[in-house]
Length: 332
Image (cartoon, rainbow, N blue to C red; front, side, top):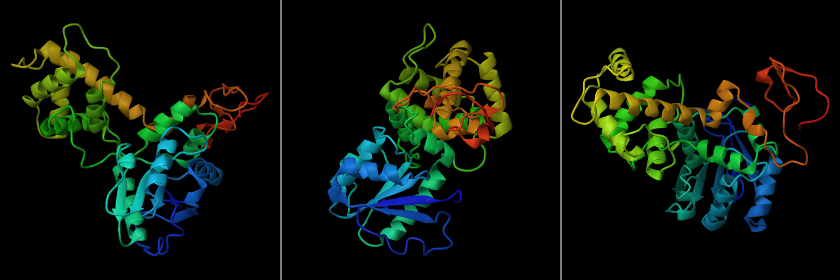
């Protein structure tokens, strides 16, 4: 296995020439060919039995759009044993509404299916961080509650680089992306578009619901806060960090939109939102080594912890979390 492996779950038979392009940035591709006539539940079971731990792309033919849409919905509802759906490639000319509404990266083709799969896989790899395979297995397992797995499956989907803001203006979104890069540096490689996710969150009214006394709703506060910040924003990382420090300290000049204190209060909330959005991504949970999401579960036995010593882990936890600890009983 390499860090660029993908799997393909095909409803249209084998996809030939999928691994022919040796210079691609992604691959190799493991193929799982399924009969769409089996129905979505049987297909889900087959995918679960295959124990796919890499990101995978669903491929369907001209006649498989409805089955593909049902399968996507079931995966994103948290079907047990399945995690890692990253995209969809369908033969045709239009992405079905049943797939589009879930905001899954998707492509349609009437010609070269293999080329479309490789292209979409490369885009997915570039658009967002990859969940390490040991962590994907834990998320897919019965230790993780269905609702939690559903949430993590949606959060793992790569962000659309052509995302259009819903609550903010394009200029406000661009500034929020600048702020996110300074507040939550994500390092090298593909990153999460925290600003786009925050825009969707405030438009949907899904924030934590807390705001300082005297401040307006989240949508209004973000619009006002970003407009106020735009008036003093600078170019260059060092200059931007200096502006951020002044805003945090309440030393920014008062403007026509917000006072210095109001700007500081809003910015505290914005920093919290950005940090929460980063940490809520399953790749981030893996990065910080947090396995606490896998203590709900739908298995026959309680899914708690028996090993609590520092530097030790349980058998089901990824090996990077420490040496295997000794424990009586079972938490599998």
